[in-house]
Image (cartoon, rainbow, N blue to C red):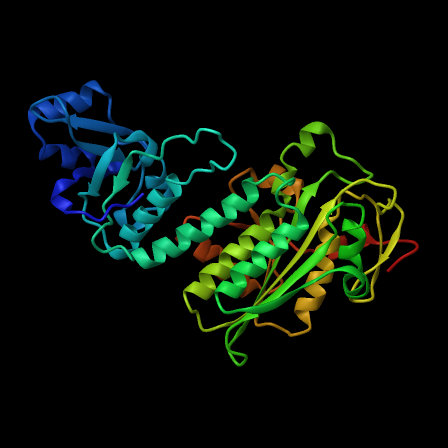
Length: 395
């Protein structure tokens, strides 16, 4: 991924936007200009062209950035694809970058270097291209962020047979304890009494439902609480999904993975906050004791809920976790969840929906999402829709 070595020994990599290509070509030799023209290199995003030395070997390379207006706007994703497109060996970024852009470039390289090889009998070779850390990059931050993202990706990629609710909660607690947090896993009768909706959703699974709850930081610091939906597999329950809809449902704990990854970054960065993390971990399975359409569940808050569809389980487990989180009145409460397929239909696969109760917080999150190339799009919490979730028999 990264290689600490003499910068001069690494091949130079130029980062060129479409608008800056002509001025950059002025400083190149006629042979290089002709070669790039023959390759139809136009600095389009992710386009890579290698330049040869006198012996025909690769001397340097150019990476296109597309229509990027300024190098200050460089995103990690501009570099992520270069790892697989460049020849093996050490590379250094020759284009001068300020610290934020240099850090983004290094983080993108780390993202592109990720591999999930757990189930391959013969793991694929690691990427042969490695990057000499850019001079001004905050590599401590890059390594923290990359490790946390790799952890989240590993959790999401792991099949449900190997990532049960028990395993998810245990791995989350182990990570928390390594970073000095204290916490617990709620199971059994304590879960049934304290988090009845979580218990009801997960009671049909072989791996019993549970709730992970840990805290970290000084008690008088600003309170930040993260809640992550941990549905390790979602069959849809008795309202069973079709095969195509069930195929990727090992990822329905992606909210939990993101919450744990963010918590890891917060703790390893020693941010001055009082952090609390809640992860309801369940499998929405089918058995004789599965909860049913038409059942009325009592939630932790005391509100009763009529089940209209057992494939809408995420909002049930989150209701209990959010009720527990809200008791402390945190300054910021963030809920991560793979809710819902309708949001993906509305916004596409690369733009998550963002809902919030405080406009200034929503706008701040949206603004920072754009800054770190992880955009979100606000959606309405419209009071006029309340009647659509009413029930004739429950609250």
